[in-house]
Image (cartoon, rainbow, N blue to C red):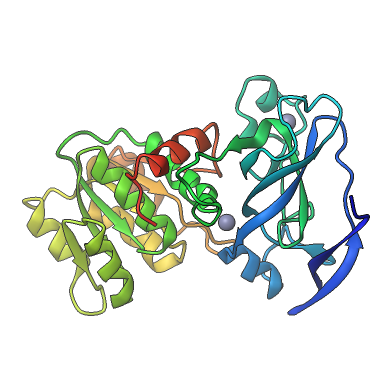
Length: 308
Ligand SMILES: [Zn+2]
Ligand SMILES: [Zn+2]
């Protein structure tokens, strides 16, 4: 096997260079994966523009990828060279309370490929053997890279107690919002999705949203109240992460309802008055990444139940 590989290295602010770098050696429990496909995420862009606190250069970006096993480290004998896989791009300590109690995504020293570890914009990448998932035969390498962005909204929606016939509002029709839409629909909800970009709304309509709304043209709150008999939504999913949309969640949710915060911003804080949460007995849920969610996301893709 070659000793160097091509990699796209973020060298400095908005500076990426294609360089020859050493092929990394898998340590105990790790696997070297030959990358076949890798997608660009919003966080890669945030790292490139110096707006992501976890990403410091020099680093190889990228964390949404699929490929084939190239080499196994000691103790990673559950995999063999040539196995087709998709990568759950986490590194955990295996020792902290979260790891020992099975909630590895909350590991106190959690690291992501492409954030604190070298990522997937290279010929090879290191992954933990326990965080590789076999790619189903009928899912292509290109499709399989979407397991990662599909897994976090799956994790998030599974945290809400969405019931058949519930009214769900999703704010933001980006990749995350569109996956959340499909999960909420599959749980039997009636879903309104809101976004200022018409082309994103069109995709949401094609994916089966019951209502699409451009908040630049129509009043979102009025529409939600009209559709729910003045009650508000059972669940509001915020998938943008800016103060305006975060603040709007409390005005859209019913008393006793649930607000799910998927959108993430490093800048916004305290967007709404917490007394509203108390007085309307709201449930506000956060979410971080995914936790045993890759197998379900891959299965839904393999069954053709997830559009991307
Ligand atoms: Zn991502
Ligand atoms: Zn840990």
